[in-house]
Image 1 (tube, one colour):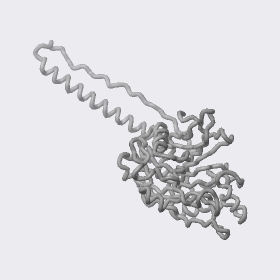
Image 2: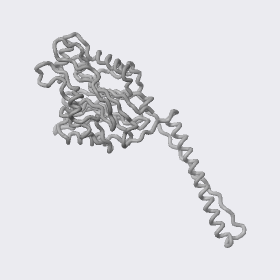
Image 3: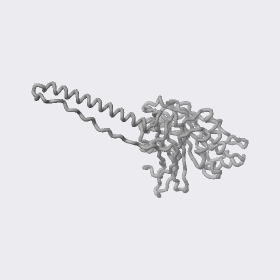
Image 4: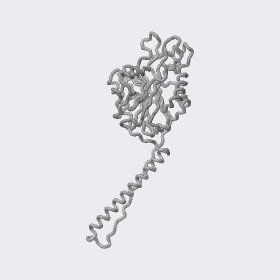
Length: 362
């Protein structure tokens, strides 16, 4: 199994996909329209170009709006595994989605998947949509794509950790590809997410992240938000190396034309063999169901032989000790081997779309 996993996380701007002047990226879409550029389509081309260079094993996309987004990325990258999920924003009456696309040869096929909402309903039971998709593969690797609520303090980081922890049942490695809205850089190697007793970070200190991971967001001169000075687009795992923004940051001048999304893409390498708490179980080359059943039968047969041998040996020793007191016709009884019970498990499709509840306790 490959241990150096190449990863990409990218927020592709729902407003750019719909080409509407809305949300915090209104000024970005205005700029794209002003230069007659379909920034979303150009972003898809850029993902294809980056994949030719880096050969990504897993890609996480936030703000998935376009119905053909996953199809386009799978076609451009030849990656086979995918899962798309969305949660409901009851404030504005729309779904907000995320998608994860991965290499099934290196990371395994989809075993389980779910979509949850990381947002908390208010007193009126209204809720933002902060989508989090969790896929566990046949190699026991947990792939997570997420769009966090705004992180204002350390307790917010702990709260998110607790929610995600409750929805991961596997103890395998965890890779999170997320727009964490971490403007204050609360997540770092000094203050990681703690999920399943694993310390998950981007591998940088707070100061290093603020120097090298300013990925959010493009804004015009004079905008209330600063231009590309915030952190938050992260790849989080136990051993992340070489995390960086692979493109030159666009200017917010009138002459700038190299625009793709209001966020910058972030890439990194995750070393699964260097995870301190997570041994990797490689998936068998043959069918998981067939080989798993074969191994199960082998273990049953081995147990049966051991039990039979042990019982026979014990019987012989008892017979020897009591030979003088037993009638001459006494003989060893044959031990009937234990019955074999066979458990069949169904398969799971590789491509799946789900809409999650706004509850944190799905």
